[in-house]
Length: 333
Image 1 (spheres, rainbow, N blue to C red):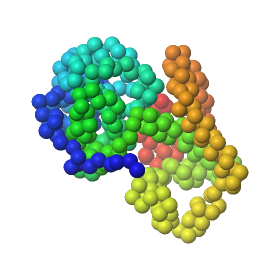
Image 2: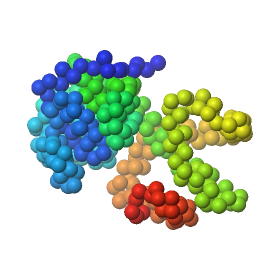
Image 3: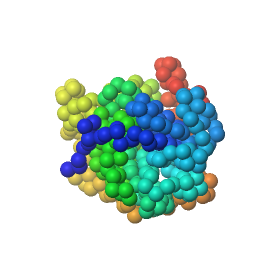
Image 4: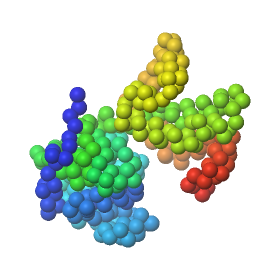
């Protein structure tokens, strides 16, 4: 069973006289920077000179280019996208690292696939929130925190675990519980959650329901447009996957537990599909495909995105969400 760390396991005094660079001031970076500052930690921001850079200054942080931020700090939080990180690290971070310092990742991806070339003289830590940036910040403010997967990947100083727990406390995840993990496990779980087909399953269900005679409006409301799904997600967390069924009618419970089961043969087929996804993650097939896609300027992704945006669901969905007054985007991505 994985060990879970809580507030009493972290000591913020370890961070006294330390400066932390938050490299990347996006949603996650901004949230972690604010939380650390509110925990009494000295923080500088490293970012390209764009709107995020200006936002960091407006928020009261000292902001520099990435290389300068690294020079001015002792611990470095790498909070840029996975696809950007290796080049940034090679160009701006690695040349300015000092032995005994620490780098902190929020995703195991670049470690698992060997894309991050770090020296043996620094601690390598992972603090991977299972929460978007807004939740990282609101969890800290509320005092409830948020869960994370954490690990020490490289212990160059001998004190890496204590440092990881201190940072976890400063960021706020020890309030909610930090689960001991490793980079490979975090990568596997994170990618699998993104690959198993959630959005396509919902769209497929919408399609067949409309095909059976339901109006697009009724189908959209049933699956996600009503917001009921958000409340269901909450009770999944607070009650448990099957215990939350007791909050439904008996008709609903019977339908979900009995009618919704796959047959033995269907179960085998579905599990085999999911295992192929896991295999492609573990053996690096996905990472290679994604790297080639980036080098080729995203031809497959752009084609699939065009196809998805041309689906009839998109227009029906936008019309309904606008009529309901809940649409929060101005145009298609």
